[in-house]
Image 1 (cartoon, helix red, strand yellow):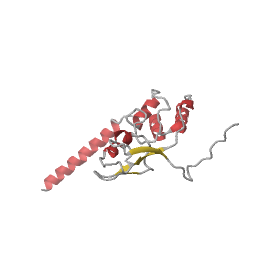
Image 2: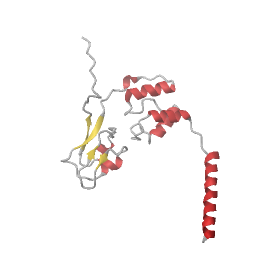
Image 3: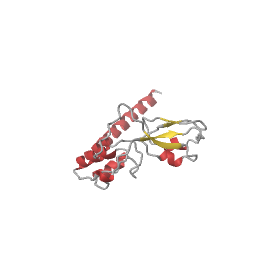
Image 4: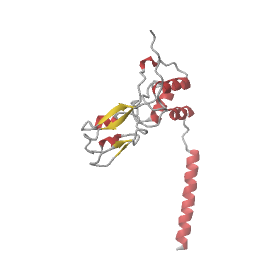
Length: 175
């Protein structure tokens, strides 16, 4: 019995040492620019940019294969930050400044099919099978994937109501 304990302990130590050395000598170097760009992106992996997630969007941006205006949740502010980081010029006139939106469930039309929270990238929808669902507005990024898969049209995207923290004075109109 003691021999088995000694043998298994020795094997564990040797394999642990081998894995540690492999991690040290065989690690893949990443571009630090990709890490910086990925930190700037929202990180919700919503797929609104057409890429599978924020890490692949950061790689495309670092390789100059994607425009800096690719992230709809980031808006104009993120596009300008990315343009400054990558030292490229950007035309923001084509980007409309949208008010933030979030999904809202119409309880009278929801049948509890659970398709919506299976596609939610941010886990903003909570519910159970054949139960009414709800949306955590703080977690919702307004990508609209849940609206597309809802068979009963029980989800809508509504603009976020202004709060004391988000309200801004509107710009005066020129006469």
